[in-house]
Length: 332
Ligand code: GA4
Image 1 (cartoon, protein in one colour):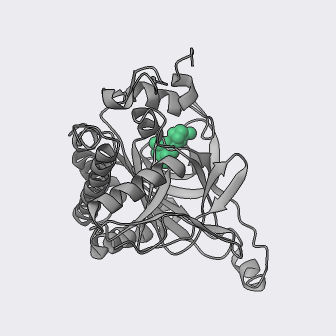
Image 2: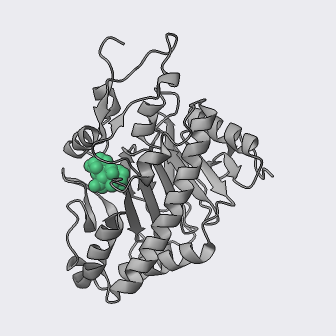
């Protein structure tokens, strides 16, 4: 059953958007239609009845909140993010900053095991929780990628999911914590303030990978930009995962799906935590559209490149710098 309109509804009062909502327990053809439309028009959608057990999400959240609640000195003892590890305010390698602290982990089991030794006082619990969560969201990402391949008419429906299931997949898990931006005394005084002072937590960017599967607590902050300079807040919904198309999927659909720019703002009064799984291919995988998608009417827009090449370009630029156009065929 579909529980919400496939068309995003703009709520004029709060100026936020209800992203297309997909109930994954609905009939496959309905799910497929909704996902295809959402990826083509918004690059974002939400999923419910996604099969990730609430306990798995709750345990992961508990581990994340527990980590961020530690004293700053202890958190800083964890490997500094370069790019994996703990980061505070510094994002990426080129001087980008934001009001955010985060844990960035490579999602492969050996890497999780190794990082758990630096991050937690109870590494085996940390390892088990992160592994369970990443396995569950990876399964969800793969199921959605199979629906997408079918919807695109690709004969091999595992063409995208295979890259994520590959043992060498370069997927990452990121926990972002956005502390409230007002100091405590101002928070109390201005609790009824109509214009709370929100700051940029994680600046404008698009995700380089194939697909992002994100959940957050019930504090808003995510905003998407469907039009240059216009920011639409996404209503928080802890019961749903927010899914978005990454740059690599835009390329692998020859521009049919949109990798949409987004950012995260802080809340002046409440702290926000989000957990994002970025589903990525192995470094040596070619990012190319399956032949059925490239036709005489829709010629290839991008030159072939590997994920390693794209990632290198992404990491050599500033957060907000557009990258996909660097890989477009110059003749088009
Ligand atoms: C955006 C999506 C993911 O959070 C991330 C980010 C990465 C980082 O924080 O190290 C990047 C950013 C993200 C895109 C451009 C580069 C790389 C910071 C940055 C300036 C982990 C990712 O893969 O790309």
